[in-house]
Structures are given as structure tokens and as C-alpha cells.
Length: 371
Image 1 (tube, rainbow, N blue to C red):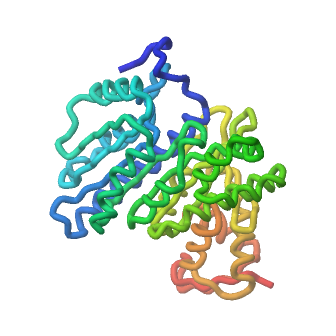
Image 2: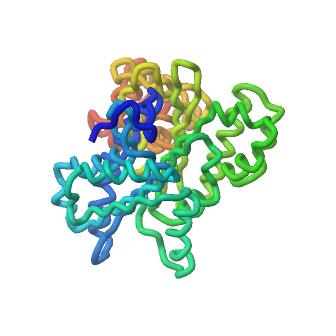
């Protein structure tokens, strides 16, 4: 169902929005089958998964491109192995505060046709915090667990997002989140009077005030680190990793993944690297040591920061490929797929690494940097 340019409930699709939606789709293409098949083997009679869009919008943009709720649904409905997941109940919760956009979203979902019997869509009119709290509160009161959940939190601005509700979500095991953080706007308004309540709600603390006297990159680094630390306090959170989405006009947005296990981190990395940015945007991230990595096609990837991180981590001590894999995933923006062929093998050929291996591959090898 395509919308017209004059429809007041819709808006134009900006390049940074298209870029973040590509990441969302890429991650769900990995998350849905992994969690779907896993849920079939945990002993539940009726396995269920919940997908939440906290700021859903009308479901489609003025020029016809799908919005995040439709992207989430199509990520499931377009799967060729959907029949193999028929025992899993996929529950979608779309929350939108604007009544007109709620009605438009309902029409867009209806336009997808008859949904499979194991797909349930619930569209709620209201604020994200109050609606989602109404989902969580009974679970907390009963002392039970929330079913495995993926939440996409993309507030329009930052004043509508609260760390209190996202923190409660991440207190449950097997709950993951992708948060879109408009860092340029937070950076700009952090010292402006009248923003105190919104910023304290966003960060879940008033520690953000320490950023007021800071300037430039120092302020950005402090605010991002604080936001990540607050997410890490969730009981179900093991890894928080953020990626920068840059736009041609100099705006700085962050895609922040909050994940419960190493496999989720691996899938998030894969999703980021497999997505081509749209015109006027680019993706970047930093290693643990602060070296910037600009995402690029595999044939032009510079893995020198990955090699430097490995050298910083292990020095001249022996390490295994499993240890190198973990360092790559946890301490750098790189994928595991970037480690062997693009990093270790060239370094070995250049005489920078000593490798003791039982065969030609790195499996079961002992590795160390030459002094």
C-alpha cells in the first residue's frame, strides 16, 4: 500500500534512516532463524518470540519505502524456511504515540495479506514507556520471565526514551536490543537549560552533567561511554557494542546493540559489515585501544587496527586461535571472518607472527608476535 506525498502522517525517508533500517533487516535475518530454531529445542510446548518496535511510526514513508514495523514483519515473512518454524509463535508489538499513524500502520499491516497462523501482530497507541511497562509489570509481579525478545528502540529525538524501561527489559535473559542514539543532538543540547529531565531519563542517572564542561570529541566519548555502561547494568546483558552512522552533513548517530551472549555479538558484527551504506552515509567504530575503523568492502578493508589490538592484548606471549577470535569479537569492530585470511596470514607471511601448527590451517595452532 503506497502512500501519497501529501499524507500528513508520513515523512520523507532520510539517508540515515535508510542506513539504520538496512542494519535492522540484516540483523533480523540472522536473529530470527537462530532464535526460532533455538526456541524449538528448549523444552517449551509452545515456543514464543517477541519483537518490539517502541516508536513504530506509520509503517511506510512518503515515497513508499517500508518503515521499521514492515521491515520487521517482512524479515520473517520472506524467509524460505518459515515452514520449519511453524511451531514457534512470533509475536510483534508495535507501539506508536500518534493516533493517525497508528491507523495508517494498521492499514499497512493489513495490506500484507493474511498472516501465517503463528504470527501475531499487536499495534498499540500510546507512549513506549507506559505501554511496554504494562507488558513487563505483570511478569515482574508474578516472578516469571519475559519470553526471548528483540526490541528496536528508535525514538524521534531523545526525550521520549527512558533508561528505566530499557533497563528493565534488559534485566531478563535472552532479551536483546538495537538502540538508535542521535548523538549529535544529545551533544548539542546537553548544556542547554530545560533538558535536565529528558537527559536524566535517557541515561537513567544525572551523571551526564559531568559532560557539560567538556567539548567536542571528549564530550561525545563521555556520553557514549555513560550510555553503554548504563545498558551493561542489565542482568541479561553481556555485551554492548556501538557503531557510528555518519551522514554527509556531519551528523553523528549511534547504533547501539545490547546483547546477551557472544553469538549475538557475532551476528551484530556480521550484520554491520554486510550492509552497504546508502549515499551520503558511512559506518565506523573503534577498537578497545581507540583506533578508528571505517567499514568498507572486503577487498579494501584495512585490518591493521585488528593486528595492533591483538599485539596489544597478547604481546609476545603465545595465544590460540580461539583467544584471537574472542579478542576480535569483544575488543574490536571486526568480524571473525576478518581474522585468519585478512590479518593473521599476511602477518605470518611478512614475518611478524610465529605460528606453530599441526597442519596448514590455524585450527589448534599456537601463535605469537615476533619480538
